[in-house]
Image 1: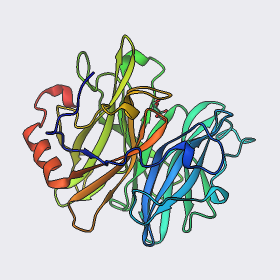
Image 2 (image 1 turned 180 degrees about the horizontal axis):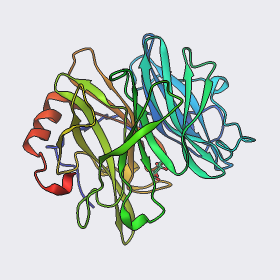
Image 3 (image 1 turned 180 degrees about the vertical axis):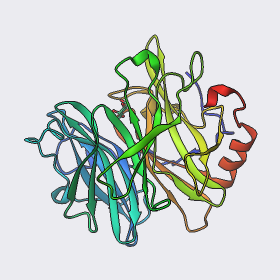
Length: 320
Ligand code: BMA
């Protein structure tokens, strides 16, 4: 087994996993892949909760310090519209972008045609206004930027090709109104061959605005003889034109090592859907699903991540 290396940039919270199914008021199977925002004085996780039907809903959990003392608002959960086409088999993996007082929740609807990208909005995490399907199946791993560029919203997403051997890449699409989408193009391509992020990649948390650009964290899925390994890498996009990839790292920066990441419903998975910048402007807290079973928290210094990206900028054409 790979053991922990103290040189890793993301440091796991000593009380990991910070949230488990046992803390929920109902018997549920797994809690994972939460969207994350600051809400009032609290950290709010919009947790993907898979109950014992196998289907998922999204449940808000709040905590003052983002580590413990969670209040789980079972009654305020976003319940899938099981009689709809788009959410017939549940709702999953929310990524939340705050715009003014509004929260734009981009989530996966597990619908009759497969996974698709859906949008809901809320101001209070009590009532959720569904805005419909924004990318048809199969498509997932999507999030919005918090501001428009030249009057257009930008969405990062990951359509799945019908020919899997051609690779599943990260795309960007544009919309004037969050309803009509187009100008789609590949933003980051899955690499090929032996790379950790060969063949299939997808966005993690929403893009993070930094003075140097939009920091992107994405997962790479490496198939092995005993299943897939989900690991995380970084890229930086141009601040004013996020279609421009300034830097893409060569190495992964976080992968499954801890026992709760290495075993669970889906072993060897770390899957973040949200991160938060602390008031110091440097401490980045990443919340992630661990082995599709529990929620972990890992912290990194933004300065360290940026420095790592510079030192590990991939120069080969395979990064494009
Ligand atoms: C992805 C998504 C995630 C899940 C991951 C690992 O395709 O469906 O919800 O955490 O697989 O199983």
